[in-house]
Image: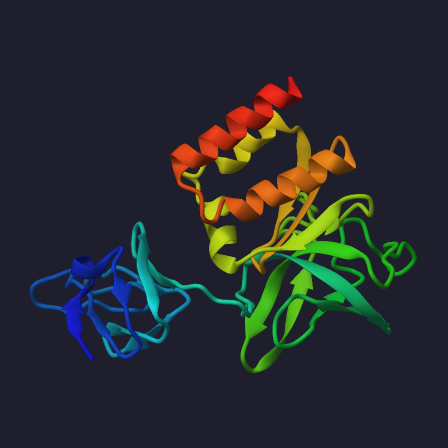
Length: 251
């Protein structure tokens, strides 16, 4: 087990049990992991997947690469097969059952998630959404912790769908690794934009490793799916060569 300053291992491999020492924000006060104090200004540190709090520092619980996002968000990027629901994550679920006023959805986790029929834009007791067993639903977790059943909603804080809801039936959904999903959703990543320049399409990406796409033709849809799966292992140069090849063929 190692105890190292967190700045020294950013982007490096960390192992379960390692303790990451957080930088002090003031000479006479340790860093607080809670809401800012009224006496001393302290930064609030957010622990992402693969990390847990140990006093005023962080402890690693998963093997992987340590990542950081400003101002103070840390997580471990690991190759994980099973998705663990996280509050705020947008996911693609499959409706498995209707139970009273709730729908049950398979979200690729250990437990099914619940979704109220009122959690859709414009839904009322008289105007229920047309959701059937087998439908794909794109929603956001509003409850996700180990002591409660995960709960989804298809509206944001203002009651708007904002792109969420039942996904069209004529597309294609496939599963990829959670690492690839995080890679595709990174703001600095331009894979999706480059791919859309070659194949115009509709695309929905869930943090639970599910991707739904619909291109102009079935053939193009399957090509896009294969390219996205391959992007996990392609370098930037190799990816650009593949895109250039298909761009010439399409034209």
